[in-house]
Image (cartoon, rainbow, N blue to C red; front, side, top):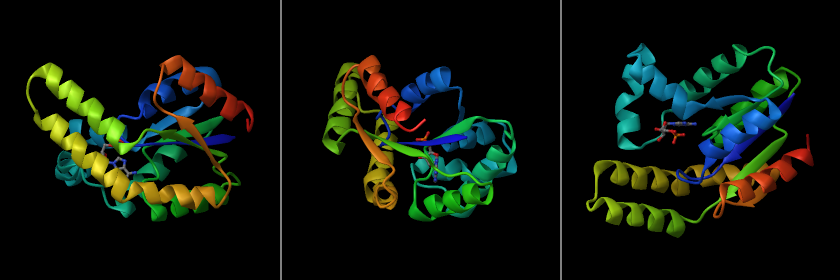
Length: 190
Ligand code: AMP
């Protein structure tokens, strides 16, 4: 079992790199953002509860997020390991994940931080807006999510740094170059 947390702000490339990691290492990709969007699309009870929260770019309460994530892990008893993408986003989520995995005799093996500064992301978004010729709602939403990241989620990093689990990768550059560095980091612990 090899468990990887991929960590970084919206727009850092977590989704893109997760796809490449799955292909190479055969891990199960668990994205809490994807799970919430699927609940909303299917109009489930959970979807109804979280719809507004996602629309506002805010974080879903920990209790809801943690139980949804644990349920998805339970659905994959034969997995070789998991990539946790977009989770944990708060320290209580990180603590819950540790306790949950420990109960199964597993742990988080590696935390990959895709390092992209707030200024770089905001500059990227501004560029996109210039190209499209207008400031649209999605860009505004994205800015809110970025604020939420630098306000709340960034505090998860020291939690894992204290456990000596974080490898930082420069998230600015070519996709393949970044993936090369990610592969080296995984191979060192795999
Ligand atoms: P993402 O696709 O990972 O950027 O997630 C999209 C949205 O889903 C976020 O802006 C939050 O509203 C919600 N979300 C996803 N993961 C979490 C999480 N671990 N904790 C709380 N809210 C989350």
